[in-house]
Amino acid sequence: MIRNQWYVVLDSKELRDRPLGAIRLGERLLFWRDADGKARCHLDKCAHRGASLALGKLVDGRVQCPFHGLEYDPSGRCVLVPANGRAAPVPEGFRLRSYPVHEDKGFIWIYWEEPQAGGAVAAPAPPSPPGFFDDIGPELAYSTTIDPWDNHYSRVIDNQLDQAHLPFVHHNTIGRGMRTVVDGPGILKTEEGFFVFVYNREDDGRPRRSTEEVPAPDPSRDYKLEFRFPNLWQNYISAKVRVVGAFVPVDETKTLLYLRFYQSFLRIPVLRSLVFALANRFNLVVAHQDRRIVNSQLPRGDGTGAGELLFPGDRPIMEYRKLRLAAKRKLGG
Ligand code: FES
Ligand SMILES: [Fe+2]
Image (cartoon, rainbow, N blue to C red):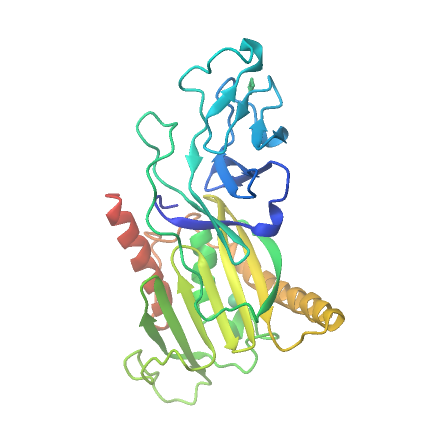
């Protein structure tokens, strides 16, 4: 897990009007909404004696610890120690460590920055907020399903970029037709990640074509994948149908796959709900075909330095690994 990145960590619908505790990026985190409805995130460890504020409640736009009633404002600063009385100033250092939060398009991101000196105080403003897929507008309605995987999130990402597994893992769903030869794939780098253009075909004896030999990448072409570092992926099936995945790191060995089905072809509410239910169910069937295999991959961890032997069709995985490496280098790691 790489620090100083904006990670999608929750769906907006998960965070309502109560404190929410969640393990993300290996840390016990507290999420809540302040009086303006703005999402907030802190380490979920009361400065007094370490209780979980997720078990507490919201009081007048502050979050109250369930143990001795300390109250924290949206910045994470403690503003009341009931045992000392309202008249007493709150001692310095009574703070929660905070992460910057961004909310957009029904997702909540945190900027998982490195701990600052002293560990407790929120850092200065992080780099500009994360973007989302430019071509997903309000005309596309969505429904989300959340699926737990027992592996590092980068293994789950690798899998969604992997073109060679389709006729094997998904032989009876999305990989029918034994298109085993991976021509290309075409790759187009973007500011935040890259597109993958898929040219899988049956093996008719012709040699496979390299990334340089397949048609030049063309973002206006239908059917492509897009990956945005560090944890967002889109399967662009058509202008009216998309699948988006957010690979939410729980810890080094657990990931929550937030799968969203977007569509704009049906507007009648009853039919729409039916299509969402069917699409989510189908997407989970496909995801579980993957999960069974990906959860078996050894060694555990992010896959780099694992002694794997990649082949040319694994190019999208290599591109993802390069992004990870660049982000780690930037941190001096
Ligand atoms: S542990 Fe939170 S108030 Fe004491
Ligand atoms: Fe798959």
